[in-house]
Image (cartoon, rainbow, N blue to C red; front, side, top):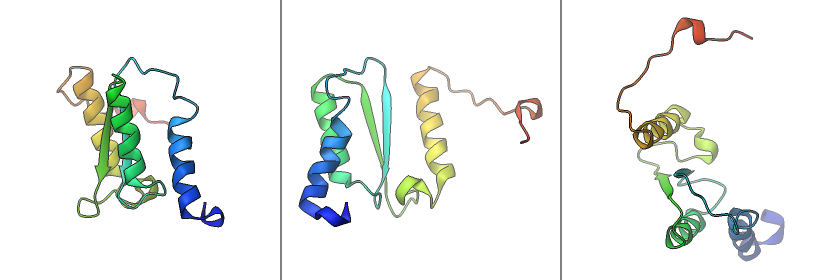
Length: 110
């Protein structure tokens, strides 16, 4: 993206985020997360989110700020926070408030 210039990159981000699935209408709730310092501009994620909402798609957006961490690309500065947020969101969507601890039998050692 750096090679083609920022204006073209921004347009490319929007096309990539909306492109292949623009004709698809989400029917089940979906969550999109992005960090404040991610590779994709937060403004583009917000634009895609607002467009999806206007279309009636149940798309939620969470932007992780620098202050709360998980703001780096791929939430690498705090992946645990991002994962906890996503699983808590999923738990609420499924109608459960109970956390289920993992059993030692559920662990795979590779």
